[in-house]
Image 1: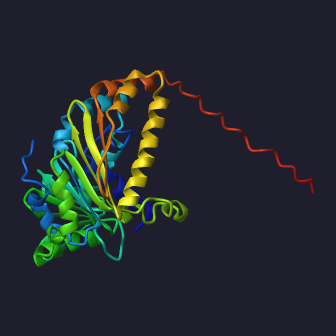
Image 2 (image 1 turned 180 degrees about the horizontal axis):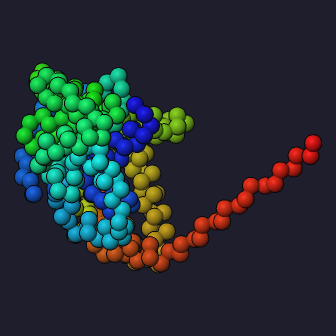
Image 3 (image 1 turned 60 degrees about the vertical axis):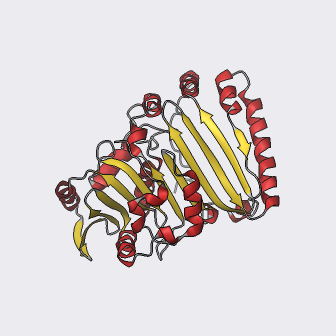
Length: 334
């Protein structure tokens, strides 16, 4: 897989999983309301392999229609590059086509970006024409049509209203998983955690080593607490509320992590200084958990988002330094 392909897929997955669409959380972080019986009731999980390294969900429609999305879009107007690139490659418009997404880290010989399962409304003929127009190919795999671009990026319509997006290997494995009936719902450890957090507009559960392996220097990773699992859930409307949770390997590691977080929160409150809105948001941080579990709940009200916008507007923009001409050659004349 080329570096360009990895970058595209990583950005695309970030947009889908976070579900914040264009203009949120800088240029890339910015779907009909949905009633679920919980993460275990998602039909899309039948395509996720049992050894998935992480699992995430985002109700894109709720988030795209939220007041938070509108406010953050105003902070970063015109930043839609990630969504536009995703549409160019796949023919899928995040603004109109997608209701919700499930993403999973699929193990395999090629540790590429996650598999994304998107539920919505798709014009399959138009999308296929767009992909082939840009050099893509159409393949048949066990009765499903795979639209493959750049040799690795694949889109497949697994059933009416359900698209799979990811590397060719990941999409093929999703099809195999559905046929074999050995999916992630048989992974008791992962599904236990999903059942505890799956009532949010967005949530994610991951083995901690899946988040850190290959992304942190060895000397940094060795200093981290002994964490087994990480989970997060968020509720998005006029503001954002959520909770981060980790499950450590023993109670001593959990206690050490709580002490570190207490120190971090205290330092952040000191740094808030004269900004009352920031101080109020930090007051909303609640540290909890017991035994091997550590949790940190947070609340970002709409006033906090406005305050961030005001701080950004006040921040002076430094002029770009002028380009300096290359130094004259000091080589002696021949």
